[in-house]
Image (cartoon, rainbow, N blue to C red; front, top):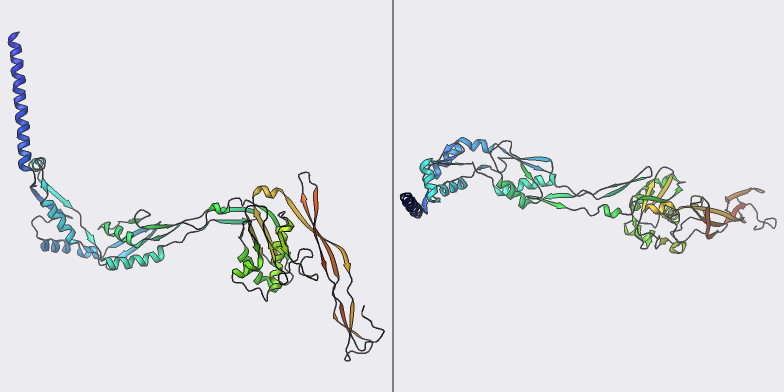
Length: 442
């Protein structure tokens, strides 16, 4: 029993001595080999052994095998799903000898640890390098500028589209442009001999994203048509100009601040001076649509004509030349004009919050009094005796009440008298051969 204990103690002592020897030996070897070069037997570039070659020899070998192939290659870029190619000749694509030579020297002169040497003794080291490619920076930049001209894409603002009385909101789409500096670096870092190689340019490595000016929030609360009014186009010669005016007004946001028809269109570069007849049609259509939103009439400034005009609705006509047309607030945070001109009418819709569409307003112009025109006789010797020539038929004067109705949930209409317009009569003018006491101004 005592003998067995002695043997165990001797074995433990021996094991400690062996472990200590191994640790000291490894430490000494590591210290000896630290900082020494790795013994490498081969450095291979694209299948060519360049271990024993100097820089010039390496360049000759690689250029002989790959030079023509590289110059005829194309650099292919993918930008947001579109592909673009740059010919190798265009940018003087060539082997980057300086880069390859530096990598070779770094490998052969790399400092090593004991384990590196131990590994080299078991299995000889072999370094395989890819064929580095370079392009002329100036030529590559010029090529990227040409690509940018085709690839750059502007943003698309959010839009609100009306279709058959429905409202469709289209989201915005960001635009992008090629950041030439970033893209140049990305292309240089990813040049490859692989014929199917595709360099993907994205927001991370070469694209600047351009945010839209108008996003869907711009149309928040514009969910339904809350009013509509139209004015018939009596004179077709006005169609073209009315269409141009509609383009300037369609989609305009009414944010509760003061809107002045004349100021707005003059600010858009339109000359109203000789086209008031045309603009009166458009302004009258907008006026009717605004009244049908339920706006307080006190918030609206509108001047009617002195005489009733055949091409404008009485009680709702606007006389821009004599007074203009403007309004302050509609009672809603935001509304939008929808203006369409077809072959027969100027159609103006007002788009607003869906709850406002529950209130349906109507307008009714009622003639409550008619003023007959007088007759003015004008003597004209060229007129045959007892013959009359009507120069101007004249026009009746009118007194008109404008009522606005509001349909309630019970289906009954509430009528509100908004105002009364008075249109003066225009005398009839008649030419006769001789004005005597038989003819008097009536």
